[in-house]
Length: 149
Length: 335
Image (cartoon, rainbow over all chains, first blue to last red; front, top):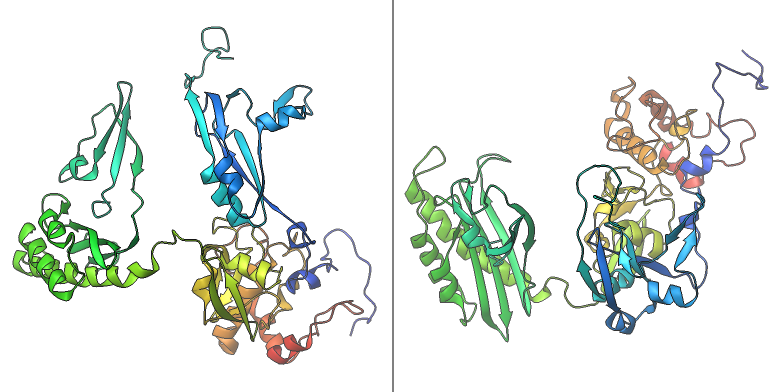
């Protein structure tokens, strides 16, 4: 019979993990498991177009839905000078669309609500006036002939 | 789609056009789609008022072409039928819309007699052929039966509508052995019900697309992914989460198997389920631990270790001096 004391071993040996006990009891406590008072939920409306001029957003119906705290648009961000933010690669990027959509799925508006289902419902009440613009769908040189700034 | 009066949007370099489904379907394997067109949208109008529908398919085996199939839809207002939709499959050279039967129901009371008349008219409108699946006469009779039966089902479903109105439902679920009640959104997923309403955060939402298994729970003893089920569907049923009494819980503690632990539930619950199901009968390692799961699956779990635990050694594999000991509930199950 081997000694009761566990031998310290290295490469090539199994190591019993100390954290697994709480994982297998479901007591891991990940970020999403943390609940604090007054927490809200966000849902994001994205553009179905790859390239489109944004003529306006009517968020009044979404804003009026019970449980909606705020509907944030690019216009609101611009008022606070937050619409375009620096990135780690040194350029700037639109947080929410201001003048026009530049790729499909770009974030157009964000809803903050008291529950995730209300937030999703509110997205459907936002009326966005897009004016679709031409898109480049073939790979080619990024010169004046294909580039659409 | 015929029953719901849907339409399709066809796009090409020349432009865009919208066609009702009834015109889109031209013949067997033939649609109105031109060679340069792509079908980009299917538009289904939102039914007005209280509505319900169903689809009935007779097939010789799962996945086979239908012998006969019927789609039924009813929109009701003030107790009368505002609009009926009847689509039939496999009883003609293309899918049929039983327009005469639909017209006979419009404005009528939803009675058995009205449904019987619709069934008769639909059967008349169908033109099945005799083949390996049955005679034309037999198929026509099935159309009659399915239309009558399907309309009755659609009517039954109608009062509850399609979730157009906002509201909550009162449900009771037995969670880890204790009855829990909640007043929930009908759309709330079981995973969110367990996490938000019942406060059991060991069930995680990982991929949200039924792939990863992080949301695994036992529903009436069988492992399911709780992100793919509504909470209200668990009403009156029994849910066991990773926090609950799971047989053989200590087993997945084999080194290296858990990694980040976010998907521990899928391993613990599948292992528990298998241990329960297979019992002492099999001792060889199973290569199916955590089937239907992504990640965290570095190891196959030898079942005989589960077995050892079930034989009354719940804490035996724990590290000497481990801070967490299995709880009393686990021990009672494991022994």
